[in-house]
Image 1: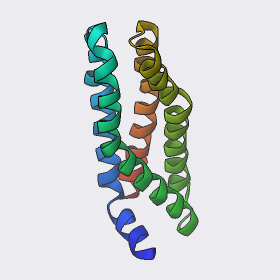
Image 2: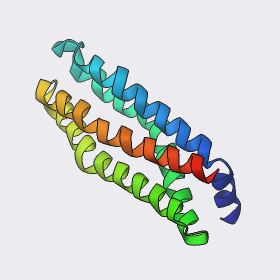
Image 3: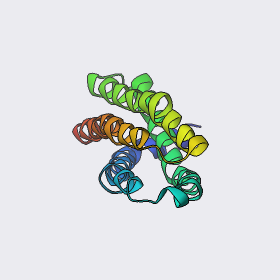
Length: 140
């Protein structure tokens, strides 16, 4: 396990940068495109998107959480705790706000209010992951 943690710690800045770029693309390009997809195609397109994006997002999120938590345990400085708080906040918004929105869109189809909520609340995740990137860069 220590080899995995060392690898993650050595690549923390890259992981944080990748997560920031990915969430930035989602904020600026992907979620706004949800508005453009016709309702009759949305119910088949959206589940496909969710399944495919998960292959990119989840490994980065898990790597980021493991590294930020282990860095707090082993180093424990203020920047480590700040990064962990940013990551935990992003996780909270992801699983308490964004995931339920996606589940509702899968269940009920395209709902403009839910798409707008996704775009609006994803900004919180974008800021949180930007905070993680900045603190990671400061630690580097």
